[in-house]
Length: 223
Image 1 (cartoon, rainbow, N blue to C red):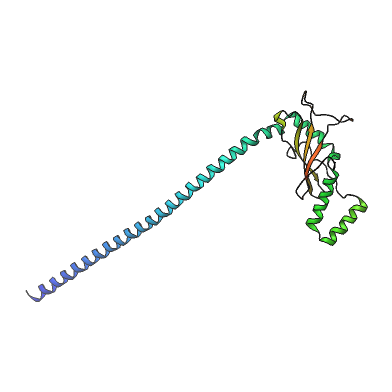
Image 2: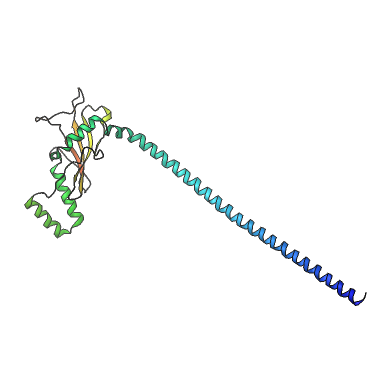
């Protein structure tokens, strides 16, 4: 083999080696890319499984919550319907025009609660003296009959033989205070109509109130 053939053979060899190395690099890059993609897919799969698990848990919680809501709806649906019937609306309008049936002790309790919430002992004492000298500084009334949420029947659908029970809320707009009240209305056992007093007014007996210090029962002696 002469010199030219030897050089040519070496060039061919170098080219072949370079091509093979290039092919190996390409194959290595492809393998690396595939492994990276597999790793990324595996990560996505783990994330997807975690998401599915989380969604399954949320679904179970939502189903449980939905069951609770259905039970709540079944329990209170009749009460909501009764609160909107004609008889209940008549009583709501009747109570609206009679703020005098709000117990005086409930109003005094509201004033006391306001003092305890916003004043110290000395200021509370001074405020109490001011109320004693000038009279109660509160003006509680019942909201408009068009607003049905402040007056709700508690046993209107049970054909009571003794009394109806009602929840009501009185408000003092200027002081931004309210009193929750529980009333009983005695009924005539013959036709379930409310009993009237000597003045021809429906009898509203307040059984308990919450003026901001918790529910307090009213006894006959206290009335």
